[in-house]
Length: 294
Image (cartoon, rainbow, N blue to C red; front, side):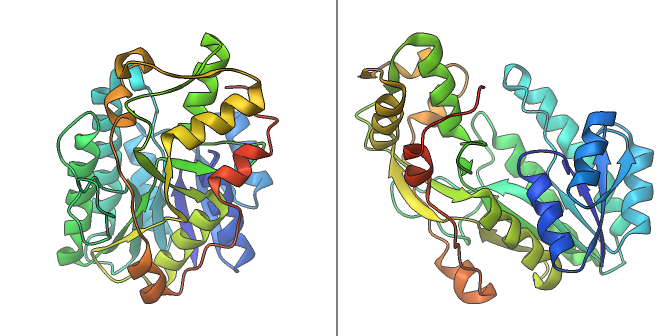
């Protein structure tokens, strides 16, 4: 198949492109800049020049390919409302181009909050809180399954990682530790975060494009829940910094999320789609040290 991928030059998108190409697919990757286009091509894809706001480009790319994967997000945490609105409009545009075609459309989503128990693939997405708008966007796309689009949502955990490259939310703690001289955690540190290696996540996106059932959500979870204190302790050891509790608000606009206990399981995903993570877990990657600059 020939697959259109937004966010194709990003930390997750680039390995999704590699995964698709290595399994015989062709990729048309959205690229806003020359540098992004070069990354798409280096991963084995062909660049489609444009950004999330170029709706005519999105429509044309989705129409001329056999399926789409949406990964792009501005990650402007200083204006989440704008970023979420931009993402929603882009996804709606791609979805509209696919109505009635039966083509697959896989989007990125997040694992859910389930009051301390393991979140499953069948838990409803949150539509409240700092990033609740992304849940609303995702639900709207999944509902296109009733209009002839083979939609699916790959729910990523907080930390999508690969040693020496990126550590997801744990990377925000690394950056904060470098700035403050303290490896911080909030609350009592027992709150748990699921995690997944980015190459394992990439393989799940491919599986959903190939055989995902319409309207399905899957959990790309490798580690069900590493504690925030354990993560902070490893970061402190690698950076030779003290480990201390701090108020949630000192971490910034995402402090509320850092304070939540949000373990998740991928048992149903593994059983249903035969997905099996094979790469190192978050703690093992963090222990390797040599963290990239933020």
